[in-house]
Length: 278
Ligand SMILES: NC(=O)c1ccc[n+]([C@@H]2O[C@H](COP(=O)([O-])OP(=O)(O)OC[C@H]3O[C@@H](n4cnc5c(N)ncnc54)[C@H](OP(=O)(O)O)[C@@H]3O)[C@@H](O)[C@H]2O)c1
Image 1 (cartoon, rainbow, N blue to C red):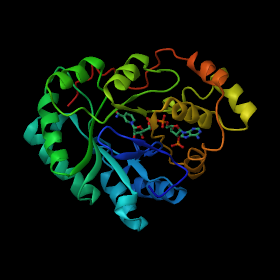
Image 2 (image 1 turned 180 degrees about the vertical axis):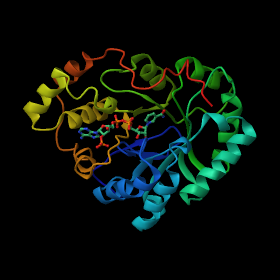
Image 3 (image 1 turned 60 degrees about the horizontal axis):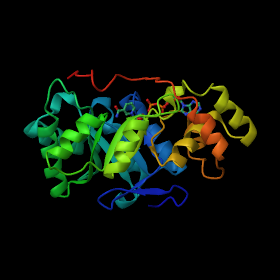
């Protein structure tokens, strides 16, 4: 990877993903090119989008305009719920590739299990095929609970490289993280800043005051030291740069324990067991 300051995490198939990337949820397509260009300029090389975000075209424009070699970029996109099922997954993947202007995706995720629709095993077979054809470098899932992961494992299929889940100091996901560790699945944290909801926590602001870093930087540092992959989102250039400037300090064991104490079942998004929207 081209940015030496950002460490990589080696996935279970040997592919390396930058541990810190850039998310574009809720960024309108016409603003996405500017945001992703600012992120690439700042030094991010990993971009996280999804078909449902409606901004793959804007991401693709920024990637092309950057002039960066393809092999230095790591692009994640996700299969939307309405496109689950074997054939529909293959079609949706082609549509995402076309919008992004790419020939392959570094990490392709099933966005939600949507358990009531019960199509994720079929969808996963299609993602496995894309991986075996080399059109996807790493195959993963998102918002899968241990029971959903266990079903994939029991079906004897490819072990997902990544599970991208809501994870931040207010929702620390201990059970899932232990399951991932046991099965060689990397943990990727979405809404790593809880969309700002944890940035006023006294345990976090106290560490920020002592270290001279912002609350957001303290939270990102907490993730990195736990081993999580993080994808903070911002459309504000100064914050885009700030969120990458987290490799020159460390939290102490006491700091890590203090942040651990702020876990409180805080969800900013839907519960994966109950979210079946198509
Ligand atoms: N798989 C899934 O189901 C799923 C679900 C949700 C999100 N995601 C992914 O995860 C990414 C990140 O999650 P997210 O966008 O929900 O939330 P987030 O990254 O936790 O928080 C983003 C919010 O925090 C603000 N912010 C960013 N940096 C800041 C800083 N240094 N100081 C203060 N505020 C700051 C941003 O404001 P400004 O933009 O105004 O600067 C924005 O309002 C998404 O973009 C998406 O790629 C995936």
